[in-house]
Length: 162
Image (cartoon, rainbow, N blue to C red; front, side):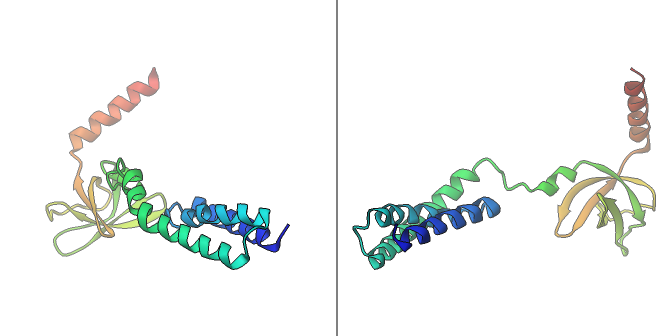
């Protein structure tokens, strides 16, 4: 086996691992680009510099022609949502008061978030709020109606008794 055989094998393995680790659809094209030179190096029919040229050409073509198409196809159903979107609609307790002039805070999974009221209303410490949306690094929240909260507590008690 030629030393280029091992080089191409290493390129394939490293770029495949990098792609699976990042999922950014960048290094996978180099993985595919290294397959033909890998096969050619096993046959010992093509010089090492020709293998490198083939690798560069194939990888470049794949990056320029398929990357944007593939990203659009893979992200088509994602709606641009992130894992933070799961906290929208959730209810939390205010740690600090928020009003027109002051930014309050909410603790979510051991992370303290800045929180401001949706309509710039005053929300006191220990009041229950619901996350309406995320704007930058701040949560936009609204007060949860106390009747709604009481009904939810009653429903939870009933479900636990069953």
